[in-house]
Structures are given as structure tokens and as C-alpha cells.
Image 1 (cartoon, helix red, strand yellow):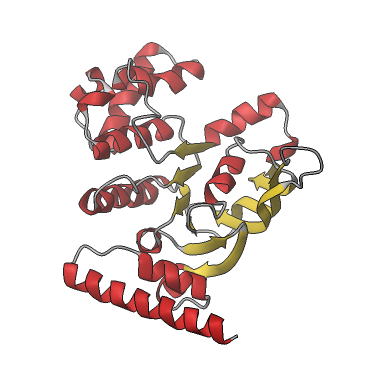
Image 2 (spheres, helix red, strand yellow):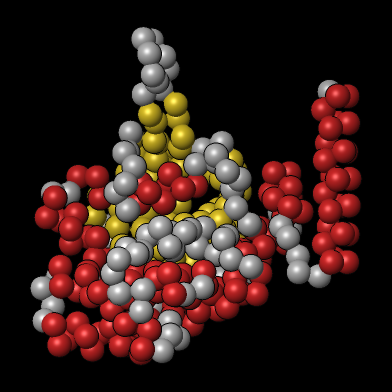
Length: 284
């Protein structure tokens, strides 16, 4: 894995104008900088409202950039033409949290997977062959292509969403809470699939999650986002086992565990941590 940045986010600010006269703009992201190398997974972690989804949306062109820059392979995404943006879209794909709402319920899986290929003017025969290959990559049977999204479980639908993201051979996938709606066992299987695909293809991931325990299994580096700013950023093993910031420690203690005894111990540790910090706040 090279450290040459594939994606660079440089002092990014995303602000939305206030509603009403003289109402100040709301800063969702405030000077965020990070990078993702080719073949690397960077985990972006934070609680709801931290700005992590906004960052992912900005990378794929779905959120406005107020200041700063987002560069993909050296190209400033914010300054490209519409035609160049379409070309970049082939290289940067996204997997959303809820696979069912992102899949057209009236289309078969084959039609869903063919859609981006036909848009790229790939022939029908080649598209059909590619669909079979995509289903194989995400470990679904070839016959799945003839079925509708409602016929699949949540984990299977997420596999279909991953297959669609892979259709155009992207170099980067933005994964926006892709396992948060799944049970722990299905989460583990989907994370394993992401890892296998990365090893085989050299894909890079920006993996967004509220769960520090989830990203530690897949990420090489981790950025912790709090109130629109990165407060901790470094090697995944260090951030997820020896965090320096109290907010990161709280996220780690909030992560669920499958073992009931370990979960109970973690819950007690979290309560003690919060109580100690509440006492410190009153003393100060």
C-alpha cells in the first residue's frame, strides 16, 4: 500500500446559510483535513451530528464546499467541469446505510446492476457477463439477478449495494454507515467481504461509522470527528486501543459487544468514566 494520497481533504469547510435575516451560517465542518491512500481504508468516526456524513457527501459531490479543497488523484473536485465530474463519478462510488431505500424496488437485481453499465454505454452481452461477475464477487448466486430487492435480507441487500458500487471499477468507495442497520453477525460478514474485495482489487475506502469497534477491524488509519472538527487522527490500532482524547475514549466505551458479560463490564466502565468527568466538570 502506497502512502501517495488518492483522496485529499484540505481545510474543508461546509456551512449552510441561516434561515432568516442576519442569522449566522451553520458550520457543519470546520477546517477538516485528511487523506486516503490507494488501497487504504480510513475510518471516520463520530456521533450523530458530528459532520461525518456531510464529509462523505461532500467527497461524492452531494454537499456544497464553502471553503477548502477536495482533491482526487490530484484533481480539485470543486473546480472541474460537469463532464469531468461525471468521469470522476466512475472512480468514486458510495455505499449507503440503508440498502433497501437505495435500491429501486421495481427493478430486478440484474437491472439495478446493469444500469450504471448501460449509462457507460457497455453492450448488453458484456453487461450481463459483468453482472454475473459482480454477484460472484459479493457471494450471491447467479440466480439472484432475476429477483427483486424485497426478496433479500438486509445483509444480502447490502451485498447488492456493494456490487452496484463495484460495477464501474472505482478506485475509492465512500461507505456511509454500511453495517449500522445490521445485526452483529451480519456486520462481521459484510466487513469481511469489504476486506476481501480490497485485497483483491486494491480499492480504497473512506469508512464512515459511529462505532469505533467496527472501523478498527477494517481501517488502517482512523479520524475522530467531533462537532465538525477532527480531534484525533492516526494509526487505527493506536486510536482504537490507546485513544488520547476523552471523546474518543467515550466512543470506545459506547461500542457494543456480542458477549453479555463483556458488554456489562463495558457499560459499567462507561458509567464510571462519565461520572468521573461529570465530577471534574463540577469541580472546575
